[in-house]
Amino acid sequence: MTPTITAFERSPDGGKGLARDMRVRWAFEEVGQPYDVRLVSFKAMKEPAHLARQPFGQIPTYEEGDLVLFESGAIVFHIAERHAGLLPDDANARARAISWMFAAVATVEPPILELQTLRFGEGDKPWSEQRLPLVKDRIRARLSELSARLGDADWLDGAFSAADILMVHALLRLSGSGILDEYPNLSAYIARGQARPAYKRAFDAQLAVFTDASTG
Ligand SMILES: N[C@@H](CCC(=O)N[C@@H](CS)C(=O)NCC(=O)O)C(=O)O
Image (cartoon, rainbow, N blue to C red):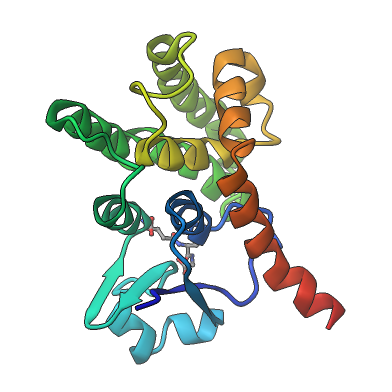
């Protein structure tokens, strides 16, 4: 059965790879699993039918038969468990990769999201300018630690895994902030992720939603 995911009908970034359906698309592309996409409007995301799939009214979701999942990290994990290639076979290496999946969404991504909230949701608040350096410093603290651990390795822990999908995608939200320039090995890590054919296919598929809509 072909799984169906949900994605933005209109994406704030215009389909430039930042919305979180991108990480799910990337995982599908890595394992060669075809998928369908149901586009949802911001209004529909907050209505009962979508809230039944995603209690917080967000994308992405995943449906396959009776199974309905939400949370992009959990969906990528599910895909990685169902298909070979995104988690190591060795039990200990697999457990470490899963630790890194959690690290991406629970430790590295949150301060990055704070910056986004400050910029796009709180930019008009009188305290936003004062808060900006604090938020950036929290990001730098995490990136310094991540950079030290990655060193000159290609991927987080041995071979490319689902953890790299989540980590690269979380870091990509910093593009344009200038912060990544301070960490050449992280910039190179992101570029390695983006150079993967599966990433490119996923990116093109997400972008096509918006370019097709604007031309058609
Ligand atoms: N932790 C969730 C976050 C999902 C999320 O924030 N999705 C965004 C798109 S990338 C969204 O739906 N935003 C609209 C909203 O929250 O109303 C996940 O990883 O799936």
